[in-house]
Image 1 (tube, rainbow, N blue to C red):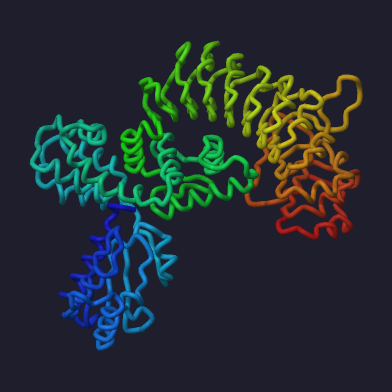
Image 2: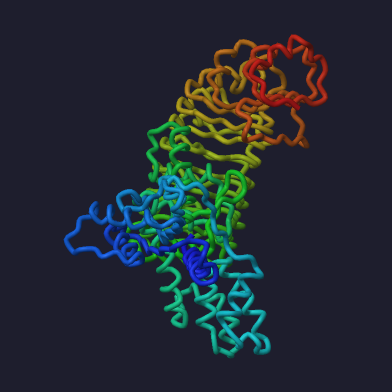
Length: 591
């Protein structure tokens, strides 16, 4: 990433080779490339280093042939290309890149550059360790650190830089010869809050880092980067949910299938990672370096009228955004009460997850008519007001891991694409649920109290592509009687369903579903009796997974299901025979 020390590292290497190890190469050529790629500028730097006279009117290809002839006279050459932003045609420059005599070392903020220039070895410079960061700060700040009481706040300042040498060095220099303990106690809180004391520091640090943002090739990528600042510092951002938000907010075309949109979203995430603007976290998650998050907030504030971002994620207080705000985040701000009647007609994204909110005012949603993404996960609400029916533009509604027990009719939310009710206390799906014909993803995992789904509620979801119901208590077995609920036949009628996670008491309803099973691109089917204390781990990598727990296999017709299974988990089962094993022609994993 920018400011990590790439240029410093290769400068030290160049000096080492030129002065301490002069016999390593016949010549070391340093070229500063910079953002605006200009072959003639690169050629002039090389020509000057090899004492080659270039005429003012010489064209690029003429200079290239002169450089090539001169370099061919050398046996061992090292060409250092610093700060490369896009592919350089080395042949057009005159560099014998394929000649064993010529070694090339380049620095870049983009892994894509490494790919396009066909580098043989690439490695990423990581942030400094805690010890190295402190040593750099000591070197920059000087003897003032020996002043009594300063080391403790100084270490907090270093920690706030998250191992970024550019920030550590700049802050160390700014605090040099400042013995006042009050300045040190406040510096780590103030230097990223537009304090006049650190105005030049912000310009030095953010100005350097912002180049990576400005070099992104599209407005979509820039908005995707800024969108990540809506999450708190050092937050593990779930990539799948992030992409859902991008689709719902209109950054990704929603007319695509879930899989197509997800694939495109992953490509956007990878581009941001390749540009060192996002970091890989645990599997399936990314995070934003704290200083890059601060940069994104500064950039979004400077472009507020254009993109309308307002974030105070992770703070123990909140300030209401202005009326032109479009994307607002109050994640984990300890909010207990919401305003009665907010007026934000342009608001498209509202993040309220992780707050101890117990009740939403009746008229809260009346004026949020443009809202497309609403996240109320991990709050303490037990119900939603009827004003939610005013959110006719809503695409994603996240209620994960909150105390909600009952939903009003969602019939008017006709554009809803994603509904997440996982880990809630929901007992029934509301009437009119089958009217959500645009719904593509429904998450009912870990719903131990769900016992009622009105017949037709699922078959009406004609666009549904993904259904998560692992560890749900709802019984899908064949039902008879006047007041029967939704049966498994409703799932079989969903033409677009491609991903399914579900628990069944038996495989009876799957006996004639061979063709339907083949259409699923991914499934996680668990056959066992329901119990409240059972935990089921959903494996992410196994495309077609079957879990048999406490099943007498002799009594089940599992042939078609086993034939389509790539991963099989068998726990405390009886009756597995050779016939069953022969059906496992697609099996890749067994436990």
